[in-house]
Image (cartoon, rainbow, N blue to C red; front, side):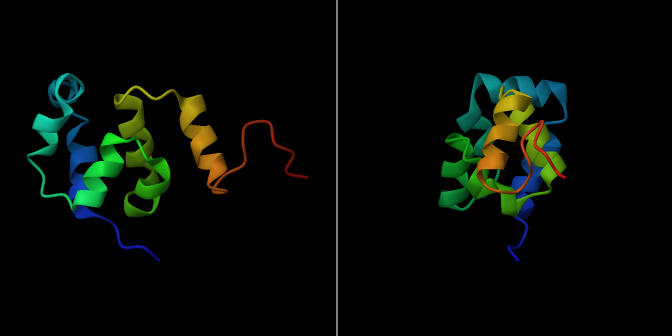
Length: 94
C-alpha cells in the first residue's frame, strides 16, 4: 500500500480556504512553492495526473482538489474509471 503524502494532503486541505483557492487558480506555481513536494509529486499536480496522485491522498481531498482546479465531476470519474478504481456512472453491477 502506498504511503500518503503529507504535503499533498496539506495542500488539498488548505485549498478549502476560498481565498487560497482563488490565489492557486491565479498562480499555481507561487502556491506550490510553499510546500516541499518531491519533484514527481509537483509534476503530477501540474499535469493533473489523477493516476499518480490517487494513492497518495485521501480520495475525498483528491476529488475536492480537482473540483477547485476546474475539473468536472464527469471528467474526474472518467479518469478514476480508467484506473479501474470505480464503476462508471450507469454501470451494471448485477
